[in-house]
Amino acid sequence: MICPNPKCKKKIADDSQFCPYCGTEIVQNKVDKLSQNKVVEPPQPNQSSNELILHTLRLIIMIIVVFVLKAILLALPFIKDLVIPNFTITTVNLINIFTNLIIFVFLIIYGISLKDIWPKSLPSIPELGDVASIFVYLISLVVIYDSIKRVLESLFIESDPVTILQIATLVIAVGLISWAGFITYRYLPEWMDKIRISFTRSKN
Image (cartoon, rainbow, N blue to C red; front, side, top):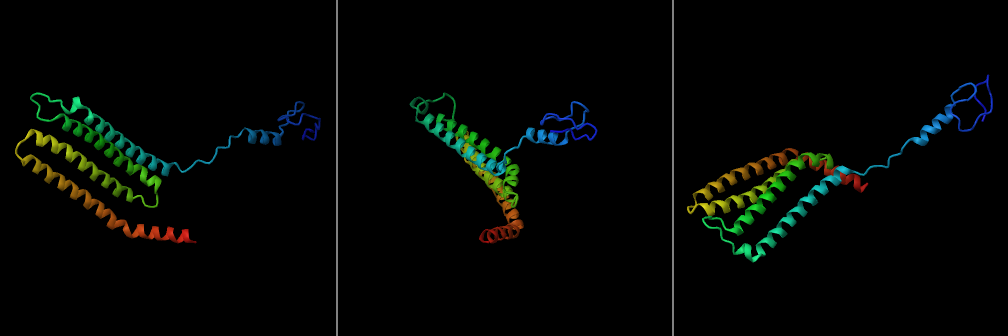
């Protein structure tokens, strides 16, 4: 190629970025060089929606694993027959309580993460994530109630502590359901409009 400088116009290499004689910058070659060096990133998939699915699958798998391990432990004869002196809670109840606590922790972590993941995965109905979290908390309440009830029944002969637990659990459950109902009542018309618009677009 020829140097673009009208005062030089000497023959230079085709891939030169500068003229070796006059120092003129070869703009076209510089642009071509930059375009070749530029890394083109492939389009990224929708990671937010995948994150919600992965978190849900992980929770389900972990709960299944806990139940399988629980069944294995309870099937072992030396565990079923184990009696701890001066300890009112049986070994079977201890295993049930321990596994319930593990599931309770998993559910609470999942419910908290829903408040962050749901709006990213379903930005059109972010408020529904709060309702989903509340139902997860309700399941957690049932799990932890069973554990505490087993402990109270083992430690106390009278039924008063269990009754107090049932009343406290009922109050918490009513509060959670009321909050979910309030969110649903407040945003249901907006959700219905968005569903109707999405359905109309899909038909067209």
